Image (cartoon, rainbow, N blue to C red; front, side, top):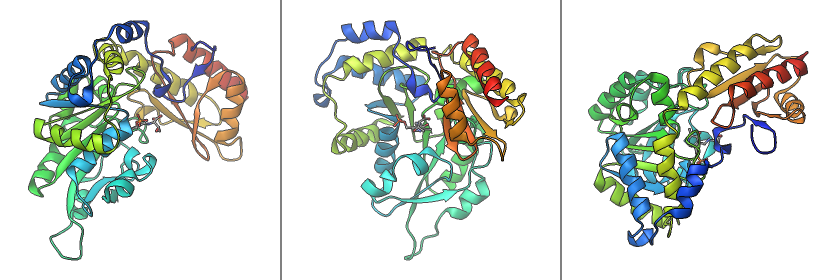
Length: 347
Ligand code: TLP
């Protein structure tokens, strides 16, 4: 529950910084990071890169900026990127890769488990022909937000890597919730980053930092990405005050993610047992729960409004679909309370 007494399940982006983060922010050693002089930003970038087994890291303002900077570093004007039709980059980033980078998006269907079918990806790769754009990059999302927050396994990522190598393509992973994926699969995040050329992950979602994401990749790639970040207006000065919270996020918030996943399961099972709601409980692997209202009854917007009036916030994501996301500000008892309220409103 938050300070206003609301059970806010709209997203894990609503999380507030922890008291330890606020202390670290107040005490952070800072410098001008555009001049390469902020020791706290450097510490965060190194820590993140180390965690993911990459050479270097780059602190960026958001997940959107992490994807944009990465894709624009991989691709030039008119290059094509293959990405899922349910990916965040294709759906929720304003088409920034096209608008700002002249990068051409080519979608391949996301399967319900979040993966792209390898044969379909292979078919989407352009042959060398004067009529076609050049395919440069495959973008994967882990966890896959719109596919129930499903986690992509290391074996699948390896198979995409083989395809990419064979067709001379690069791979970017939008790992906004990469640590949730690792927790869901019981592996280290580095295993899920190993086959990617670049990975971005968010500090400001389940890890509860107030702001920021980190892109991790080889040092030459990060040097180019740093130039791109500056061009996009993302060069930040005494950003150590933000990075300090990110360091606390990495060191204190990862090990507790399984709690959020258990709460999401509890919520999914509870919702599934209610008349008029359907949930694909078997797909709930991480902290995201999608649930559908039956045709004929309330719409998603109507149910969300009713729940809001009772202190429970969820996100309508389609006509009859709602999303609930668990995080550290929602305890098990809040889930039980939310279920009770949904039950009453559905009755
Ligand atoms: N997702 C937000 C909304 O934009 C939908 C949310 O509440 O889930 N990649 C993925 C997979 C994401 O889910 C998000 C944010 C981003 C990138 C962008 O991160 P920000 O919001 O920091 O730009």
